[in-house]
Image (spheres, rainbow, N blue to C red):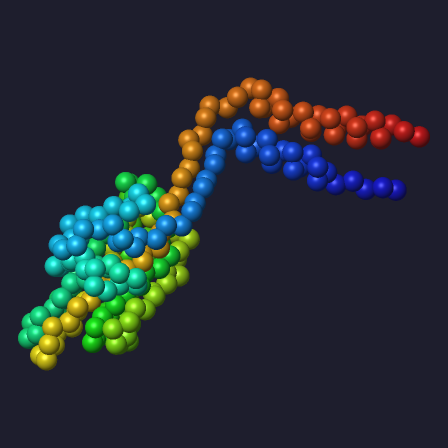
Length: 214
């Protein structure tokens, strides 16, 4: 006695292919890194690179060409004798969804307290915070463990601690994000429905023929 699977592999694969055509859904994603390479030096208001816009929400953000990973990068400075200073930037993709993977953080002589939040339709999808130990003027990459979550807005906040001895620059570089592009679903096409059913009808016909053999 011979047993057959309900739907053979070949017809099943054909069905999956045709189903994709029928639905018309297609997603592409290629990572982009915001490097601030083309940003104007000086005060940062907004900057667009690879379709992503970085906006200064709070704090005295500036683009500097004298340092970076590599140069330039964006930073803000807390002057000696001042209270701690928190500065925030926002990244958007023209209201389109994207994912966030990582960012490089920097401070001259202090640890780096940070808070990162991803939003979708104004609702927080993920939020995490921490403190990067003193990097002594180097950059440290912070990785997002929720990098598969789709968002349409990202905020990154850094807190520059109070110092009595001296001023301290703090900043970031290399924001890695991935745009998500999804085509609209077209109205179902009758010919595709026919093609979708054709392999099933053929298989059932062959199966019925086999069942009648002596």
